[in-house]
Image (cartoon, rainbow, N blue to C red; front, side):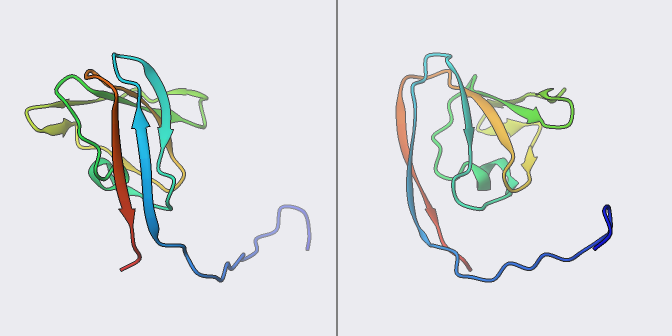
Amino acid sequence: MAPGGAFTNTWVGTVRQYAVTNSSVGGGAFECVGSIPPVGGAVTNVFAGYPAVSGDTISPWDEPIQDFAPVTLQFAGGAWTPPGSFNLADGFFLSRNGGPVTWVSQFTVP
């Protein structure tokens, strides 16, 4: 193949389905987090089961500029504002306004 040429890479296999236990130290600490299972979409999907509290923030990481994205999501009134969306393997920073917490995300393939 010539350098820079287009190609198709096909992956075949079975995706493991399981429960993932996550934790946050809370107290306003800035924690680098992401979805361990291969999940993308709305923040409530990627962060399934997370017991958000008013004042929690998510700062997405912008890989091309190697800095925080210009928009920070904040949890208030029972919802994330603005409603964020993430691609597979996107990372972000969580600042939990509440105390330490552990939650379980159940990953299954529909």
